[in-house]
Amino acid sequence: MREITTDADVRAVLTDPARFSSAPMGALDRVLIGADPPEHAPVRRLVAAALRATAVPDDAIAAIADELLAPLLARGTGEAVAELARPPRRRRHRRAARGRPRGGR
Image 1 (cartoon, rainbow, N blue to C red):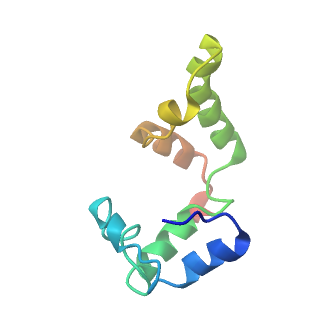
Image 2 (spheres, rainbow, N blue to C red; image 1 turned 90 degrees about the horizontal axis):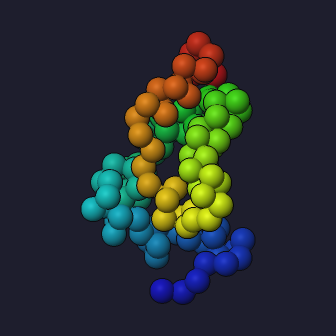
């Protein structure tokens, strides 16, 4: 596999599903991550709407970040990727969603 390091490389990967298929990711998720256009478009639209910058208030994001980083900062050391790169617990999603304005905007 070649490294994707430039803007042009990223654009090529994201716009050429025939050469850079998401199908190998199907073991993780066959609907969004492991699907190529146009099959994933309807789900992607729903997810994109939920992730708009206005969907979750900045203070909710900051509170979640503070909570996630607190143990690492208290120890003064740690491996951020190993400790933080895992699916968040559901309660964090619910807490962030409570701050979302009516209608998800």
